[in-house]
Image (cartoon, rainbow, N blue to C red):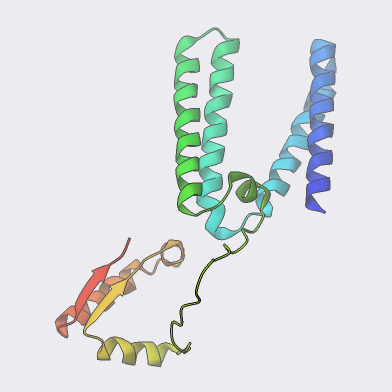
Length: 184
């Protein structure tokens, strides 16, 4: 559903932009229409992206700004703008590729808001034991009973601004003689 809408917006934006270029200075309404359609397309593309993918989208947009700057430098025949824009564009693209590889996601899936399918595992099924859900009190009891604790902070911890609470938790656990480590 969104793909058809996004495709239509892209085609209309490109058509309006092409018309504006072919008509020159007399086609400022077509240029405004192309800009407006591109803004709406940008909103629909980004609104379908999940929270965990947002850092990747930010690096993609950073890369786009570099390519726009490189194009501006080429049009203005300014080698400094062109080279700085290319540097920004390439570094954003490289960072995007690294982040997508780390998340085992394809850039097209990230930008278009698709969900990655779970990988198919071949071979024997390993029994990891029973699954147990616990509440906050159960988590506290498990921390008290543990000899060592490994904390793996993620994007959700940063969004929740919970790093200060985690620091207090680490201090209390270490005071209680627990070994605390971080997995990054």
